[in-house]
Image 1 (cartoon, rainbow, N blue to C red):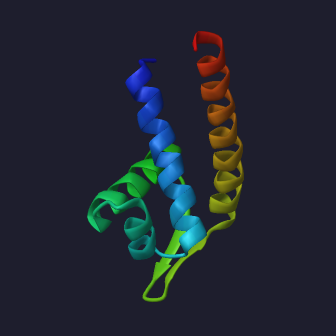
Image 2: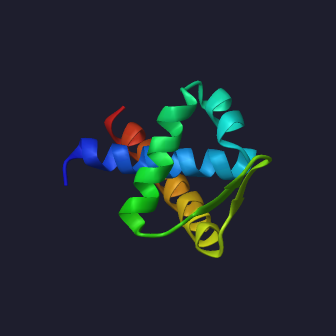
Length: 94
């Protein structure tokens, strides 16, 4: 897997985490400073890649599905570990 592919996947999980924390794609897009349609595409791509529905969408925002909660737990662990790796690499090469 190419480095860019890994980064793209991490970005999808980070976007999903932000949406889950904000409870709204609109609010998350403001926090992330990206267009709402672009964020929606990231979430849809993650759902497609996992073949899972992660969010229930309605006018008030989004709610996590049961599977979405599991993916959020995974995303939190993954993003924490990726930050640990980044810090380790900086220390070793810095």
